Length: 252
Image (cartoon, rainbow, N blue to C red):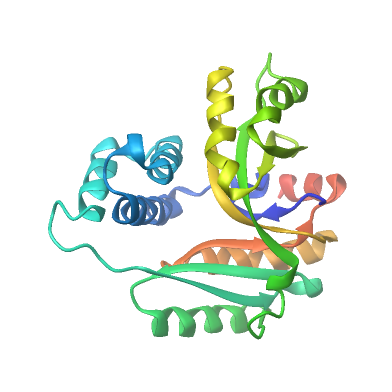
């Protein structure tokens, strides 16, 4: 499997604008609520909640907000909101395939909003199954590069935990595993004293498309607009950004 690009993990989005921080917090809180509802408030027995809380803390979500989300999701503050996960398929510029993962309490609203955003930003909706065949559910652990921790160190730590591969993503490493090996993989990193940024089950493409600067701009503009929607949790694409293209984007 070649590498993949997901908007949430590209360097291009790391310069998150302050105006979007509230939306980012809201989506992380929603993840915590769903994890607590599905597996309970006890993190010792709910690894999905552990990962949702870890991701929120890495993004500086206040502990009070995290605690409230766990209580809401687990029903301690009354009836929790019933969120549904819905996946939409479509295309961005250059024929790049997109999977748009929504977490919503109103699927009709989510469907209408996603269609509107796609049509207004150069995207097209696809039929169910039109692009999903190229994506597989995988465990993905992200580790920021730091002095003293090499790719070999990470490989040594996760090899016996079920990790399939470690990819160099420029500013960090990406560790791929089967979904059921995700907890073991991130636990192995912790046991080795290696900090990780996020551990999620994601959609990873099997085949990817390298894009030029102009195509990358169009793709990011579309994904940015999708990401601004409250119901959209994640957007996955099968595009690769070559180093020279990334360098141009970084200067913008």
